Image (cartoon, rainbow, N blue to C red; front, side, top):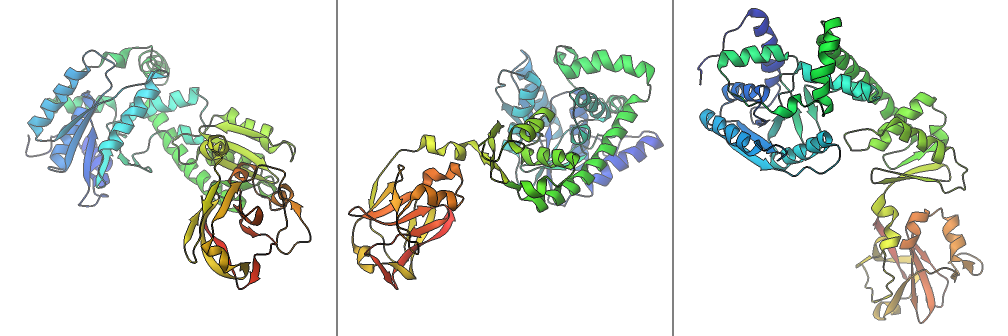
Length: 450
């Protein structure tokens, strides 16, 4: 390995400082780096440079998608090059599911990265300026908005990883020339020129055609991504303000929401539906949510399912509910329980966790030594709730309390010898009027919802 940096002209030196060295200085001394290495010329050059810049702080990972007959041999090549540079190397085999092969391969590749990354490591990838420009073109053709056209960032902090792309301002021609100077060895993946894949088609067919007319297209598209990143940051600030005014990650107040302009409504919904995922929903899915759910009649019980979540309107609120919670009642087995409770002990019910505590008005202490019954509501029950006149249908009390329809399966009735003592609900415990009510008794106090 060379003891000094390779020599190249003054422009390159300046570009290298700004795109690599200055960014490297932003990391702490404890930071280590995991390099995604495919064996291609870009990632192999990155491997050589990082081994020079950060000795003993670099590892490499080769993800074997097992889509090419030679993929295992390429892994061996990466391993050999890492051995020469004294860099630890991980070879991770993955299985790519059927469907959009490019998208599925990207998904399992990042899963492999996340699996191997440690808390002190940053993932380093060798995307360059042409990769960025191709991404902008492909996302433009797919109908992406500001966020999509912002494409790749030099540094990204995601939920499960930190990602750095130090070559993003370098052209492929510069990388190839640099790799030739250093005599960097690499492999050639034939799928990179297989126009069956969108990116390869863009690179092999569309790119030469457009570049003939627009010679500076690569720089222009890269600049567009930078401008869109600025616009995206401004848009996020506006959306954050609107979300704070309208609700949170789980519910939106439609009265306030509908006071926003249509453009701000669409952007807020798009980001809200995205949640913690990497990509926003398609434009037509946002439109469906507006037309089929938000614009529906208040009593229509309209809902929309997208990406593991249900979007449900209830009164003047819009809820984002995970499918497991929404369908919990379908997976529920009707079980009637017998239990004994003790003062200050915790009781876990379908609606939440309760603590048995003293109360100004509550149940008799003599019940603490007896077996009580806990049953699911089946419909048609009437209960005389404490403080009300006469028995009411439990269904009416639930509706008046605005308990959401998808939570009503968690309601359980506490009784003894067919005498209703109270009702466990997502709104807390409702004490029933009975011979067991007394001053200075006890009640279950809701600590947390399920």
